[in-house]
Length: 483
Ligand SMILES: *[C@@H]1O[C@H](CO)[C@@H](O)[C@H](O)[C@H]1NC(C)=O
Ligand SMILES: *[C@@H]1O[C@H](CO)[C@@H](O)[C@H](O)[C@H]1NC(C)=O
Ligand SMILES: *[C@@H]1O[C@H](CO)[C@@H](O)[C@H](O)[C@H]1NC(C)=O
Ligand SMILES: *[C@@H]1O[C@H](CO)[C@@H](O)[C@H](O)[C@H]1NC(C)=O
Ligand SMILES: *[C@@H]1O[C@H](CO)[C@@H](O)[C@H](O)[C@H]1NC(C)=O
Ligand SMILES: *[C@@H]1O[C@H](CO)[C@@H](O)[C@H](O)[C@H]1NC(C)=O
Ligand SMILES: *[C@@H]1O[C@H](CO)[C@@H](O)[C@H](O)[C@H]1NC(C)=O
Ligand SMILES: *[C@@H]1O[C@H](CO)[C@@H](O)[C@H](O)[C@H]1NC(C)=O
Image 1 (tube, helix red, strand yellow):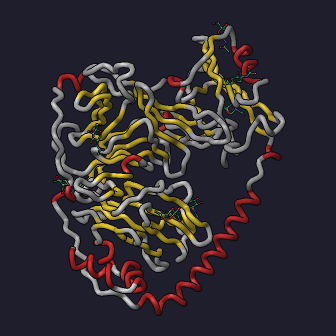
Image 2 (cartoon, rainbow, N blue to C red):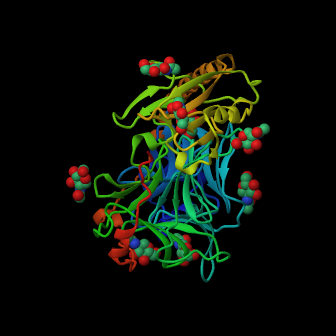
Image 3 (cartoon, rainbow, N blue to C red):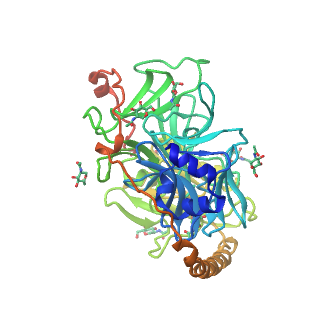
């Protein structure tokens, strides 16, 4: 390590660049000091490592997100899974002009776009990656202090022993769903932007069977614990709720993560040495996901098949975008019987006398996209967000009123074409640059590529929390079937 440090200090910057860019050994750096800078390599594969954790299982570097984008990520190397990403909603166009530097703060920038992401301005001395996958900026001293850590800014994943607080949120990679903590619950939300209040579609309220939530005693935080559960805490070692995974208590040593995925589900996984085995899903029924069949889709829980509210066979009514308020209230109407909402248990409702009253609550209100009525209970559920998938039910007493935004306001097709043309242009430029760059990249620094694989990739079994199994049995999972 000492040797490597000296090299970094004395060799001309250019050579350091080349080493960092083209040698896998560079990914074995165990820390980055002020002055560090590295450019994304055009020929670099899916992942270009820059900084390794002490076990060699995690690495921070440039991640190619898709054919055209780059991000900074911490990757679990055995699986190539990014456990953390710096800027999932705003990544750089993949080109050799993207770079990462450290001047006390970490700065990810592209020549065309400027700074894409950076940590807050800190006077850090060193960047390290811990064996927990936590990326930290340290102020060196008698006891190093942590100025910033990636654990406080999760993307779509939290890993074992990572505190998830109410100051943080998980967002699915497609940015359509989020997970947040409330005062006494953990919940999932749809994200529409455009000023639409995020509707909830799943909620786990703390059962408080082991410990009570005390008002004013600090916010809740959640953590994935190595015996295999999500603990909700207000105070350390005294969970106010425990959500057990299928593998709970089986002594599984594999590294665990909890991930909010593009379908809006949150799943727990452990690394079994070869694959990520899933042992938890917040939502267990297809039709309870927020949009398994897309906007205006109809999900049949019995057959697991998708259809459309308007009986189309070739893609349902396209109305995932736009705004009923701004489009001057132009819409047509679709009424349907035998439909229900998958998330109605967490939506608010109004009790009304009949279906017509329910419909009237929605008709004139441009922030209302639909209303679903249960003629049995008299409950009316206004849908104050763009219509997603609804559930087909046998019960004709359940009926819905749906607004169809006038098609001429749909737009967007032209934009998409323009984006594709732009992407094609970039691919061309990139290809030319790659050819020109081949000569430079041949100049590779010799390096050792050591990867210490430990049993199950270094997942250290954490302290077993003393929670008797009897109480686990009595815990009801919230994966209730909403019928
Ligand atoms: C690549 O990912 C970015 C977000 O990370 C997204 O904005 C972009 O549309 C994606 N491009 C393609 C071609 O999928
Ligand atoms: C590091 O660079 C950023 C962006 O260029 C700048 O805003 C910041 O002030 C710099 N920090 C230091 C300590 O120079
Ligand atoms: C999580 O929070 C607890 C309680 O505040 C703290 O003791 C622990 O160090 C935190 N863990 C991490 C990884 O930050
Ligand atoms: C991990 O899971 C895969 C697929 O289920 C299986 O083939 C493999 O044997 C498992 N590995 C271990 C170490 O159990
Ligand atoms: C869709 O088809 C069903 C059964 O064929 C019918 O009852 C319903 O009215 C149709 N809905 C629409 C919107 O056409
Ligand atoms: C429209 O619906 C929203 C959401 O339910 C509600 O907050 C608002 O008061 C309604 N507006 C009117 C004019 O009824
Ligand atoms: C709704 O319920 C009322 C009485 O509870 C009944 O008279 C009416 O026929 C029902 N309407 C439909 C559409 O099922
Ligand atoms: C991770 O690091 C901590 C402290 O730095 C150490 O106690 C622990 O044993 C390490 N775990 C592994 C699997 O290396």
